[in-house]
Image (cartoon, rainbow, N blue to C red):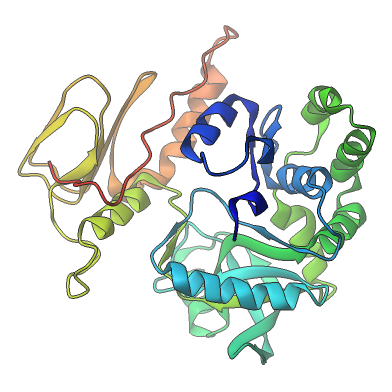
Length: 336
């Protein structure tokens, strides 16, 4: 895929950062939202603002996903594109290897339909983040996949489905994009319903048999927690030696000004200030300008709760945008 065919949707405050990190993509291909309103609004903005043919297949890929097998992903997306060209909404399902409670699940409905030599299915239903017991039950059916948040559809199909299920989101965006008054996004965005494309479109469409799932096993992680980032960096540190396990004790991986002695299975993200760690195991340390986080890797999914609590107790005084963490470079040495 050529850089000219890639578009990025992000909050305006991150536009300069995104352009700096993706210099091959034309500057005009970056779309800035006045504020984040979840993925339904982001998809609606992309579908309305990007002037491409109505029957062209549009892929939606979250920027925070880690993919170990890029060739496998491309092969799966090619099949998804073929299915989407027939007018269906397509979601990519990740073959689960454990009863994960941090991901949503997609349940397939047999029989399978072979496309390009790969099994595809109609979606029976979506299941939100389950308990461990429920996750085990889902996996034993052999029909459950993790919801990767990666989608394929034609521009015409997603525009029609947004108008059908989420007119209060796509309506104002469509009117603004048609008029060319981009500054009106500032007025419209705060009142848009903040919801995911899964809730807004995929779930109701699945009830009408309009959604397909393409299962894939490509070493996917959504990097939705600090422990997931640690695991991805550890895997990258051992890349090239298939005999070594993904999770290995190789000290405190991370970035920044840090020193470590005898730690294992830990992640340390330091800034300019020196961070020294000794004898840690399964610990996450993030030294950001606005806060210092220290938690067990096991509980790193719970960071959202403390962030929400801090937001509720924050005073009305404006605060600066958070400083983005350094972007991992898998080719760079990550040992202490």
